[in-house]
Image (cartoon, rainbow, N blue to C red; front, side, top):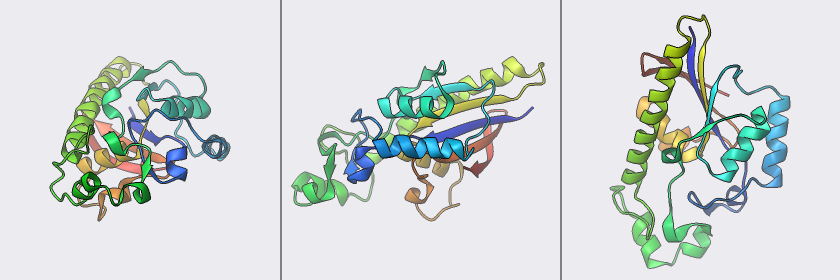
Length: 206
């Protein structure tokens, strides 16, 4: 039996185009994001998801991305896998923030323990993602059990966020890439994780 979890980053948004800090902001895909996803679907880059369980984070950009890739699919929401909450820095650019004292202090923090005003710290974010992936893995294990005597494969497909995916990949494959940001896939792309008995064994990119 093949057992895999597919992690897909949502398509391009205004936040990507304008290079804004955004995570909690519930913004839709940009027209460019919709167009690019349709092009990627036409290129057949996405994993086959016949019989897959589907998940999003409930934010509109992940909902739109799931629909554009796989059509209208019944799915569940795991809010714990949402992008980092930047609090008062949401929907602002570096140029807008670079002279703000709270931003300067936050950006200079090397420990990851300083939260942005009304937001969360890197440590808090990564712990949340770890908890969210534990929820996902638990549900995937149930998927494995439900198909083990049928000869079918177990797939879980998750549309989430760049920082979320990077956190998961860095956790399971420490040292494979020189920096956290190297794990962030391009919009609309992602990773397939090969899973066995609740453990992540290896990965492929798409």
